[in-house]
Length: 253
Image (tube, rainbow, N blue to C red):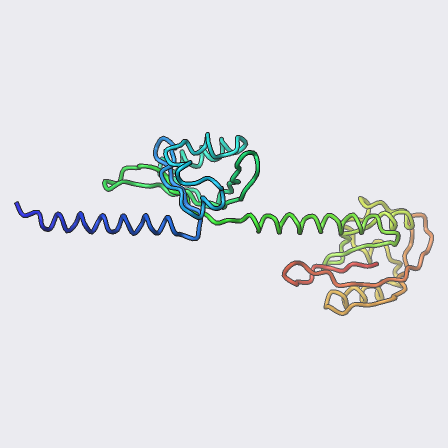
């Protein structure tokens, strides 16, 4: 029989397979694959660089037992099992650890891998390295924590309100001067709860200016303590913004 067409189809299939292999190997994203038994079948160069495990060290080895930290054995096994049953998972986080040291953190998509007849033959995982993103997030959280401690322990009364005028910050110095605890103030309307009626308009005007981006320095803020004593605090009202630059409230120092 004439097998010219068959040979041509086989040659084309091999070409596509070779192209796919090269694409996986040279991709600028970490990629690995496992078979139905969870043994590594793919481990591209990007993943080798990030994990510091070479392809030779990983191929045909059990992925979860050999290359995943014990804490993640259960979650990763579950994701792979789902993919082997045709249920794909997007955006699961996986730390890469070698000799007890975290090398990188990946955000992965787990996709079912099928053979020529549609049968499930394994799982392919494609991801991105989010190590630096996580490090930046951790640093931002550290700075935020430091700022929160600075506000709370400052030797000057500091308060904050959101865009609706509800108290969001009330530091220890404000507690010691005015007698209202943090629990008594958070979520309460600053002007209506802690400002005398005759002063409410002027204080509201200062807060509204700050909420529109116009800050006020050296404003004499009249406050009434829990015990009925009047205090005047020299205040700087500063606009508070989020990471996108959107106004989220006012801080008074």
